[in-house]
Image (cartoon, rainbow, N blue to C red; front, side, top):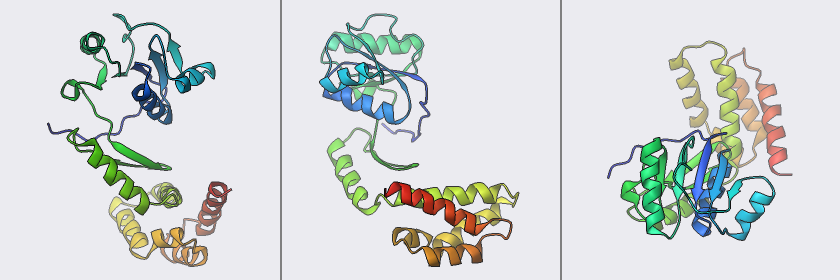
Length: 229
């Protein structure tokens, strides 16, 4: 099966997790990082899920899944150990056009969650299409060592520059050339090495005169200090 890569915006969307074990906990944790409204349906749940419910981070319906539970939902994780319940969730997802991920039946799932990690706004994912989660996990671990936490600041800097440059109304070709030059001249390495003097000199030299390079540096240094506090 060939999958289409896509990042979903689930902020404030109702997402269901049916089941209360370790798989359900893992799915819930992932949904929380995306800002979803989460409803867990299960008679019993992992202690951490219970804590999240008590702290009002998630909703917990302390009962079994029933017909109609998916009405109004955006997506659902079917993570129970009951084949009949899993089949019912699949039928209900089709009925209400809800995106489905079924723990026991990848072939009937509408989406898979790849092995992934975050560096601020950067989301790095590895997928084998369900063929070998262990391999995807191993590659993710290798990438985590190479793409160090400081890349969060790299992304913040490039995002800040992009917002200010695009706002100046330059054509897209000129903008693309600018970012190519910034990366080619070592912007990433300067941030990773905390080489702020050379970085500021390069920005003063390469950024359009209409962009305040000093202000950009001040902003990014504040973010750097907060991330290291």
